[in-house]
Length: 216
Picture: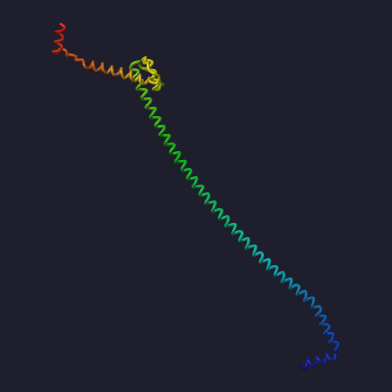
């Protein structure tokens, strides 16, 4: 308390010094104001920069989120496309398998038909060869043996009617030849039967003795 009184007394005794102090204080404040303004400006700039940084960060986060969303959509679309492609490939494979199976079945049926046709053709050819051989043998009994290895049945018929001098309307040669051969074979069989029926007397038998007496 005593110190304050002394201070107040000293100020009262030296008013110039007190006024200078106020002036100095005012001057100091004047010097501080620009500094304060600068600080405020810096503070405002800092806030602005901070806000800008925050906005930039938010924008980056937003862009990143959008990028992630786009990537996810893209990946999802690619997955869907891949699934669709797999389904399509599977359907095509199944379709190809069905077509291949149908083709194999058709080929198998065709092979079987071909084999049946070949067998039928082979069987028919054998039957034709056998009929030609049989006819050639019958004709040969009346005209002599001839080479018919290169002849078919129609050629053997033509050969037979020419050799035997058979006259027949065109197209009826086989009928005429068969009729001729059947007639000759029937006559031959009748002659053979008649010869087989002749009684030949035994030597020294009763019938032989009577025949000998009659001849004497």
